[in-house]
Length: 304
Image (cartoon, rainbow, N blue to C red; front, side):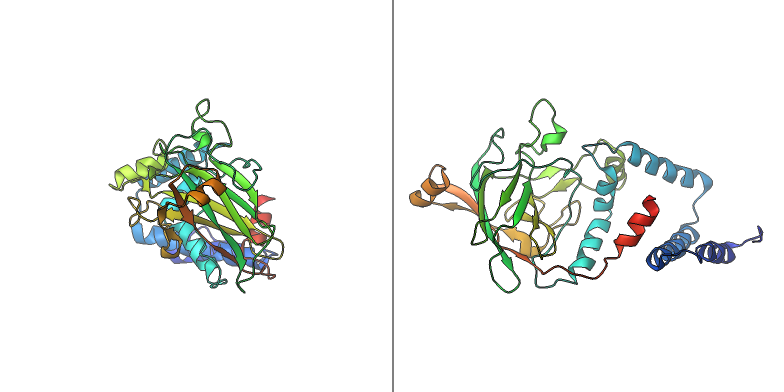
């Protein structure tokens, strides 16, 4: 390999270096990454100082990651990459509920809870009931589906962000749908909140005059045997920032009204005071896809 390489020949040489990669998917990904990354550098033509600043930024992003904080997910979120990945993968399952970003705070296991239990017993705020059904794309219920939910408190903090203030597990719950695919739980009405801005991602937002806010929402991961796992949200319909989510994750189908239910019998059934606020979402799962997903090879090979 010659060392006298110009911009175009350098790109070709790097791509050629991957020619013996045993896994074809990994080879495709690395070749494409090289073409696009080299193309970006040619277009922007960064100075050495700018490139060193970029390396420092990525280094700081990694250093900000720990057991309860994933700054790289946050970076992916604010650049719209997370939603691009979700949207592309949604194209395979158009009849299912829309997916959206996982977010950086699904870092601990949710406590097992019974249907109807309060996931936010330590949080102050307006009590609400969230309920719905887990359905197949055929419209049939999915009994026994596992429903993992988590949310911030009304001050905008997840449990892992406030050690000593919130217990781990506050704002979280792992439920099992009943024989009709139905689920319900109590919580507090979520509010909009800022994503963490005390790290490199916050510096990026400040430098680009972008706000850090997310509209009010509750996260869901729903899984059942024979179905593709789904990561999604329910968004509070009248929340601030519903049209300018800092991580571009709002989909119209996931915006639901949180309305007042005046029925005292319903309140008694849910063990809340009447009247009460409720949010309703039906979550539709798609049968499992049996082909190998694109990330299987690359994740395993690079991790070795």
